Image 1 (cartoon, protein in one colour):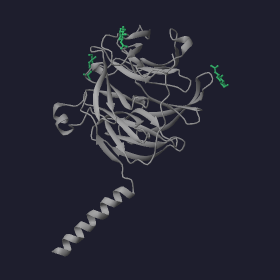
Image 2 (cartoon, rainbow, N blue to C red):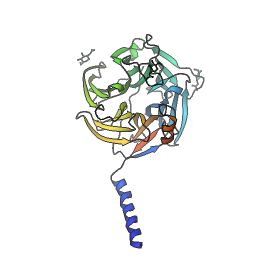
Image 3 (tube, helix red, strand yellow):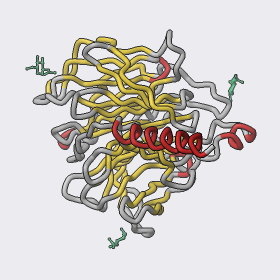
Image 4 (tube, helix red, strand yellow):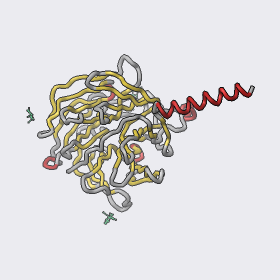
Length: 328
Ligand SMILES: *[C@@H]1O[C@H](CO)[C@@H](O)[C@H](O)[C@H]1NC(C)=O
Ligand SMILES: *[C@@H]1O[C@H](CO)[C@@H](O)[C@H](O)[C@H]1NC(C)=O
Ligand SMILES: *[C@@H]1O[C@H](CO)[C@@H](O)[C@H](O)[C@H]1NC(C)=O
């Protein structure tokens, strides 16, 4: 008997140490759920992971040291996404507010959104979705068609836009006829642009010229179509040049090698609607993952009590890079 107990203890000890030695990824829920989490971004200037609760028009802030969440801005009755850090000012974000590109002050209840420009007046029910700044501070931000709550979507009604300091009122349409403009990032050497139009179930790349901000030569680097693993949504890149992608209705994030088109890892997240990813923490080695509970039935919510919250994935053995800041 005594021997049996010792063997069990030994096995547990070995297992525990293996977990540490082999750097098993660890997934932790770090906030209370919101309705529709999206657009995570780490601001190293304030040590916070910001994200949005789209349909409640809220910018949430997770304080990494204090491990607390608060509301940094609120525009209820509006769809708010994405949020993009601005150069030289951690108190102001560039944001998509319905179809408006806006400047939003954080932690100031009396401040109104300052609208810079409104796109697609001919499509009043469209709204902005994902977006980011490039290395030159230009803002790449796309729209999606009208999506009634029953899950139908107007296809090919969106577009990817590019705003720069000298054309805030006349943005360039970079890619027309997009259904749900989503994840975007650039290769480490700044010569490729990676992009996701979610319903296409594809991750594509374009040649990218940082100097003039133009793209060319579309090429598919990964598809989830045959794999039935969920829809590619938000995306970021790591220090090795691999892409990390949240799978909507796939309850996971995946790591892919875009030059080989291979799936490297799949990390399960206990929330079916995994929406986006961003590196954060002081060492940029925590992968923050946003999720949604909006599309879950009441029954499904019981089985996924963490759906809608922010998760932190640690022990991945890889780091990210700071996101670029908007300069408009
Ligand atoms: C908050 O916004 C209001 C209105 O724009 C402005 O007058 C005030 O100075 C701002 N407060 C702070 C602390 O920035
Ligand atoms: C969803 O609602 C829209 C209009 O609100 C309707 O046109 C469409 O047929 C509906 N789709 C489904 C699958 O029920
Ligand atoms: C941008 O620069 C690249 C490389 O010099 C060039 O091939 C391309 O034609 C330019 N695009 C535009 C729109 O000027």
